[in-house]
Amino acid sequence: MNLKDLFNGKKTVFSFEIFPPKRDADINTIYTTLDQLHYLDPDFISVTYGASGSLANNSTCEIASAIKKQYCLEAAAHLTCVNSTREEIDIMLERLANAGIDNILALRGDRVPDVPPKEDFPHASDLIRYIRASHYDFGISAACYPEGHPDSPDMIDDIRNLKLKVDAGAEHLISQLFLDNGMFYSFLEKARIAGINVPIEAGIMPVVNKKQIERMVTLCGATLPEKFIKMMEKFEHKPEAMRDAGIAYATNQIVDLLAHGVDGIHLYTMNNPYIARRICQNVKTLF
Ligand code: FAD
View 1 (cartoon, rainbow, N blue to C red):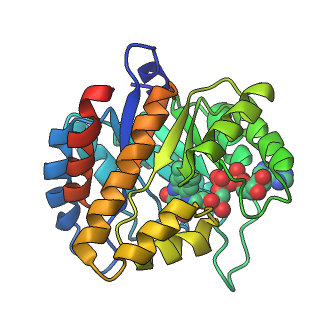
View 2 (spheres, helix red, strand yellow; view 1 turned 180 degrees about the horizontal axis):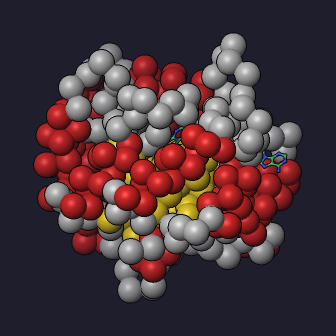
C-alpha cells in the first residue's frame, strides 16, 4: 500500500519510527521491540538507514520486510543517497522491491566526516527524481524541517528546496522533531503558501533523559521552549520523574497537534516500546 492512501481523511495517521540495531548488536533485539510495538497498531512503521550508505551490514530492508510479512503492518524503508553511487542505489532499490517494500523515505543523509560525498545524488530531490523515473512503483516520502534544515541559510530557502522534493515526486512528508508546536504551525502555513499540498506528518520525540536532549540539540538545533528547560532542570537528576515528564510533554504536544487537525503524528520511538505504549495509552482514542 502506498502511504499516501492512508491520508484519506477517515482518521489522523499515527506512525512509528525505529532504527536497526548497531552493527555488532544482535539483530533479534529489534524483533523483541517489534513484538511489543505491533500491538499498538500504528498505521505504518518506518525503519532508518545508516548515513554511510553502506550496503553491507544494512538491515533496514530485512526489518521493513518483517514489519510487512510477520507483523502485517505497513512499512517504509528510509534510504539515504549522499554517500552512495547510482549502482549502489540501484542494488538497494532492487532489494527493496524484491522484499515487497512499497514505500521509501528518500533522504540525502548527513555527510560522513573525512569521507568525501559521492557525486551522483547531492540532494534528496535527486534521489526522489531518480526513483520516480525508474521502473519501480514505490510510494515516496521525504523529510521536512519545521525550524529549517541546519544547512539552510533561512526558512525561505529551505521551503523552496522542499518544494523541489515534492515536485520531483515526494507524496508525503515527515517532519524533524520539534518541541514548540508553534514552530510547526508556522512552518505548515509557509509550506501551504508555497504550494506544498502533500500530507505532512508531525515528528514527535518523547525526550526522557538529558543526554538525549543534548544530542538532539547538537544534531538538529531544535529550539528548547522555556517550559521544557524548566522541566529538565527540575527533573534531570530523577530518571523516573524525567521519563514521566517527557512522556507528559510529548502527550501534550500530540493533543494540541490533533486539536489543530494535523495530517499525522510520527512518533520517534527510539526503539522503546514502554514509552510508545504509555503515549499510545494517553492519546489512542483521540485519533
Ligand atoms: P535535502 O532535502 O537534500 O536537504 C538538505 C539541505 O540541502 C537543506 O538545507 C536543503 O534546503 C538543501 N537543498 C536541498 N535541495 C537543494 C538544492 N537542489 N540546491 C541547494 N540546496 C538544496 N538520516 C539518516 O542517515 N538515516 C535516516 O534514516 C534518516 N531518517 C530521517 C527521517 C526524518 C523524518 C528526518 C527529518 C531526518 C532523517 N535523517 C536520516 C536525517 C537526514 O538525513 C538529514 O537531516 C540530512 O542532513 C538531510 O537530509 P534531507 O533528505 O532532508 O536532505
